[in-house]
Image 1 (cartoon, one colour):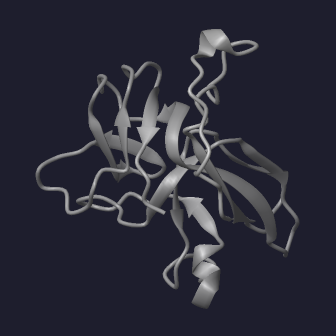
Image 2 (tube, helix red, strand yellow; image 1 turned 180 degrees about the vertical axis):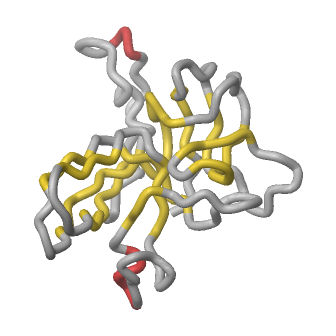
Length: 170
């Protein structure tokens, strides 16, 4: 989990072989483990969901250094969730196993540009976000929030998602 941030390119999307969100290499992605619950059917977590570290209060509870290895969809917390670490890059879709949980890899954008990030309706560009009203979804930050913003919209919300600059928290 140690993405190198020392070397960076300064290419615009037009100067690369095709438009890419990675054109400037200013996005940082880290791997975490995600716990798929026991059960039947398919368990899915959408790309663009805000993620948080798992703690002793999580289900299943994590202790010691495991709290830095596991991520879960960010819970809604009044006045902002302080455990938010970033945005899920790729959808997780796994067939559940009856009676057994599974650990799968979760790629989380912990800093930089992210497309299709879950946000509440009507948020416009250049607005600070926190996770406080809906799990996994960024909401407009308010003066009453007790945490620093986890991201800033860089485009207007449309269809429940927006392009966001994820602010490094991890």
